[in-house]
Image 1 (cartoon, rainbow, N blue to C red):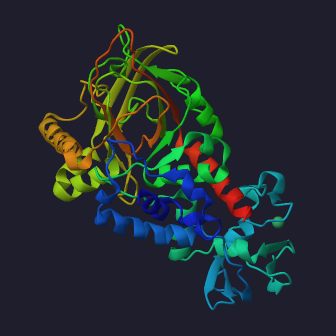
Image 2 (tube, protein in one colour; image 1 turned 60 degrees about the horizontal axis):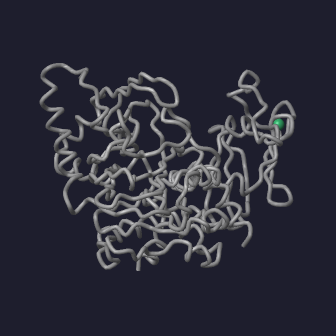
Image 3 (cartoon, helix red, strand yellow; image 1 turned 120 degrees about the vertical axis):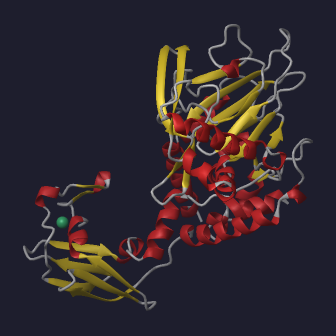
Length: 450
Ligand SMILES: [Zn+2]
């Protein structure tokens, strides 16, 4: 059942353009300890379905659009295009001149603009506008420079709110599937993801939409997280090295390198630009304990906003100091200031920054804000810790978990450390820019092969 749930979340982009071959790559994990499929709540399903409609309409290959008519509206300084399907689009003259696709104005080999802002007349008029053969629109400017625009190119750049929203969704996949403890973590085969483009695309779509994907079948030896990062591009180097070994270490330079419990946290808020994606690969598991825990930080923030708006306002406006000092890849002395809940200009949550271990004792706020801050943080953490919100799983050697470190908070139960049976995970970070870049490339190549 998870598979069908997963298909609705992550695969609409493929459904009409590819076969169902991508689907077997992600399947329900049947290991004991994971939630059963029947527990997926109906509320989550409705969220998914809303997401699906948008993703589906935004990501399907564009139908061929034909221009019926194009004309200059000189007073408004815009070109109006009337489409064969009856719709209309408006394009400002300045924008059209700025984006002329001719070889003088665009370096085709780099798909980059050559035209300098200094040479752009932002008050330009036009001489003529006409539809020419092969469904293109030609504009002759007052200095007789000619621009030719392809109908599809124009359609994609339509300024209507609906078109802009669909395009932004196709580019950034910002619609997320929120979940709670009933989540069945989407699971894929490690080797398939490495060698099959459809499997890799399905993996990255789920990583974006759901925030966590489990890969099974990796060799239980070091080097796999780096190999997986190469599938995308490159990994993110930090002060803990290219990859890092999570083990019980003497004189640990990080609380992760002990056998103690780790409360729910995001990694590395001490960096102003925290890593976007985290890979963790289990090489050896503890004999007892060491279970992993995750919560959907965006979903928890939404709950906080509903239950305690004042707490949400505090956590999304007060910048908290984080610190991390030590020696690993080299010596480091980090300081950062971050809101625990980052929201974008529209007020949507875009990143969680919270690690209680590296939260500075120095608190840069007026005295009267100290107690409200603790109250707000406690309210958020209490929501996260509710059993109905936490997904618990136990990694076995060869399992590799990939998750959104800007969204999920993860933790670990304490474990019994024995010298002859050392728990060992290898981790690596990547950034969302590189991951989304690979996702877009895979999406184009998979769609092209249809
Ligand atoms: Zn030009």
